Image (cartoon, rainbow over all chains, first blue to last red; front, top):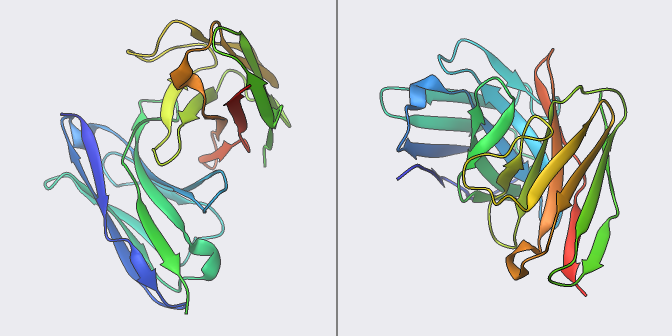
Length: 119
Length: 109
């Protein structure tokens, strides 16, 4: 079955760290760029970061650059997001998403993992 | 940065109606525009990419049109399962980034 399964969310204090993981299955993981997209409670979608299929190129939205690090292990079919210096406005459901070819769209999504930053 | 606006914010229709949702970009995005459907408690689902292309498995009642700055998602005849929030999304080539619109909530009248 083609799927993405996120894990690692939870409650963390402001300034703390958390590492999210995404396990991919059912497709050739190493052939596709991957992204993280987040959604704060009751709001819309916000792209967070993208890593190319080989991991050679990485991009972030401005609000997380310098605090978050995206990475991937193509031998384990896993995508990760290391989140440091977390702030209350990082509270959101975090989705990993597969990027469709060169179209820059997200054609497969995980179910999401909730991150709550609060004291 | 390119900003996407969607209208209306909420659209109240009945099953069997035709739905027309709009997405406008602050500058031309060519045809790099996608549409997603999100139901409560679920992840988004890709409906349309490249402004008018449907991925495999998306029903033919969903269609997209437009180019440049003005885009439309049309649902020809609403099914009960179509009531959801719809987002448009564009990508910028350099530096690579992705922007979503604020969404249109399609609810049952």
